[in-house]
Image (cartoon, rainbow, N blue to C red; front, side, top):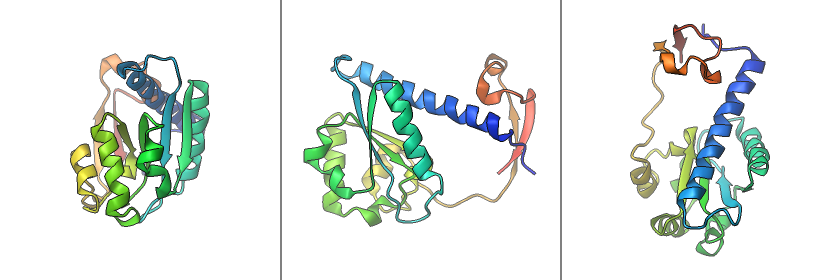
Length: 182
């Protein structure tokens, strides 16, 4: 049995996590030579070619809502045409939201502009299963530094909460040591 918090608490944890993601996106904007004269432009790509997480649509909507609150323009797509060199020049960041096995849904010619755009200073962020490529896109795997090899067996893990993090909402309600099975 897992030690999951109640739904309201899970929503708060997710909200805090997504806020941190958007803060990171904001920091990305500060490090770019664009100042903050314009909003950060993010394209979220969530097409899958393998397992499709049921929450992808909700996450996409959530990213768009939070982006609007933080002056980040978020475009959502599952169309490979949106990843063209002509279109990508309008974006600061691609966020792959659980977009699995992209090497199967994108041709080599569709992948090339993404890598060129990245090599010219574009940012790539990957959420959860977005790095599950199963060897289908070697250049993205190189950028990420890892790939999915397979699900692990369900095992119990022991977590120790760093005393400096005790006030953080992500560990709210947890004891200094707790166990979780996944």
